[in-house]
Image (cartoon, rainbow over the protein chains, first blue to last red):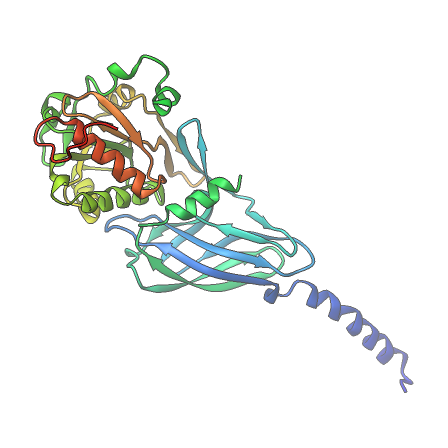
Length: 161
Length: 185
């Protein structure tokens, strides 16, 4: 029995707030198969890939990322235009549809690590915090793999357009 | 070859790979004359390339391994389209990480443009918002025979077995010392 109107109001506001908070919590975003290419010495750029799933009821957007091993992380899209390979930053980020998946993979959208502080060696892992418009920051461990044998991934990306 | 027509247009393949002059990482001047006598493969790229160039060079390195001793019968070449950043020393260190047999070539802006033109390759510098830049570039791996004639091209995304078959055909087309009894395909 609630006999104070303010307490009732507070309770109602709290109850109203709970669904909104649960709607796009960071647990809606899952990051899997996160990996980065091993880099040669004296090269300050690298590439990172992952499978991002959005279990939420509304779309989300990957806006950027941060990691200690790089001065800056950007999201880049690779395209093949008339025999020319191009790469462009997606400054507005990239969408992950509601209930959908975004593949960051060779030949398509990838994370570009800029100003690497050291080479990335095969087998090591390092954390990257991905920044989402609604879900906020989500951290994932990226495993470094050698730059070979990923042609299957590119074939998948090419076939998906 | 349909792929030739797509990349180069009809009847142009005779001119491909003629008249370029670049500097190797050890200081030698390299052009078609210096390369004559051995087939070679050639790729345009730049070291600040996060994905394509490392993957292409890795594929080339793997194919060299696949070829075993036959790999020494061809010259793998990487030409930088970004000589401003890719100095000979840097190129040598970068390429050596993949396979020390890969020959790095660089030149002046004019020499780079001439080399690309002769291979019908294109590249362009693209400024980025933070003041840096990236290079768009043709990613084909050109296959040239021992006389400096255009043989074909492969792509780093091609099935490795297909890449290997093309390289073996390239080596078989070199009439001297071919240990593969099947000439041509």
